Image (cartoon, rainbow, N blue to C red; front, side, top):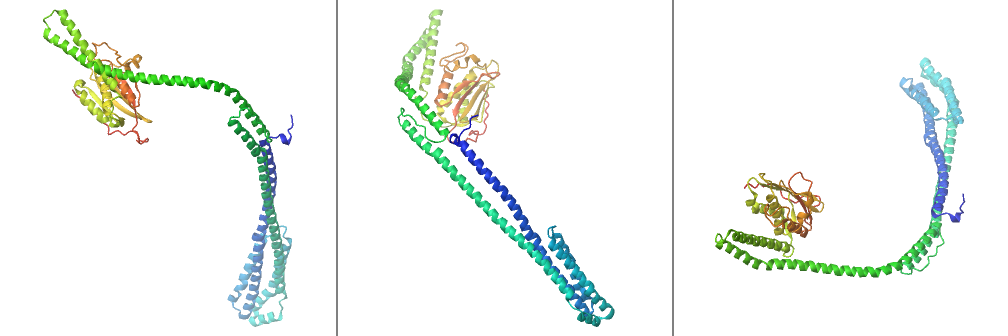
Length: 536
């Protein structure tokens, strides 16, 4: 395996190496700091939890012995038992303080332990040699004899006790001073460790900034300047690899290869641009021609259907006059021919009227407004009531308010519901249901019936103008109704389709845009559910 020199290291490798080195040093300092902190805590415990309580206990022990000596003297003077209470209290307090001092001692505190034993021994000597004999004299010989015994004696034994307590307090003070000095030293060591850690972090940051400046910032600035020259249009300029990390050197080489690729393809692009512009011009010309042609076709359909009305009315009128005046006067074949002419003229009138209505959609407009489809359905129901037949049901619920032209939307529903009434099943009362459902930014409206239905193979054909699925003598009409429906829906920005997955009847869906400004979280702007039953 080839060993890379430091100069060949990538930027990531250098940063990782720096971070690892700093991490190792900081970890060592952290371990040392933890050890120092633990020692500092122990030393503070010695000062606060051992030396200070032992010193206070020594002072209290001295006070307890003084109280014992005072109680003995008071009892010797008065002989009253109540004056002996300080002696008893002091004795109990002495035992408590000695026990507390012993509980705070450690095996290494030999000087304090020895001094405490001396205090106990000398206190016992004082009690057996001075205090208890005086107390016994008071009980057996009286207070005068006890006072004489005290005056005849000396205070050497008691002074020795107090001297022993002083020696013990001195040893405790030494322990306290030693622990305090050690705690102060460890605190200074921790401060030094913190300063060293801060210095290491600062040096590591400075080293990182140096690496970033030398290996990243300056090479990137140089590379960016060269790239900007290429971006300005100098695609033939060779990009020189900057002095930096191997990553940036490789990046510069990749950018230069990309420049060469762009330069090689630019010629082909420029050559193809002219051809694309020419094709776009041709497409634009064809689109304009197609728009003009569609406009001319609509105008022709409108004008033709409008201008054919008058001569066709004359033909139909005179054919009807012939039928009324000469009916029965000619032979049977002549009457049949006249009937054919009248029927053809009437069918031609209906075709022209339907074509004229189809061509007017979107041409003659009153502008969009808010249209309540519940109100539209009420009007449609009223118009179709004569055609509904006995027992027919037309129901709707939850229809919204949309933006559109009310006359066109009325025509839309008239054609849909009229078809449902026309293509009913024999001897079955028609049932027509209109529902609406919010689907994002549009309403999906469904008109469904229980009629004869439409085969799936005719799903697209039914919306083509003048397309009929049944013979003319079976069902009346020109076959333009659903074509008008499709044009009205598309004029309002929606789409229409036949739902073929229904068990019976026909189901036609169409969409209309949601009213602008309506609440997206609210599923409907419709009025309260409305259901109407048309009984013929």
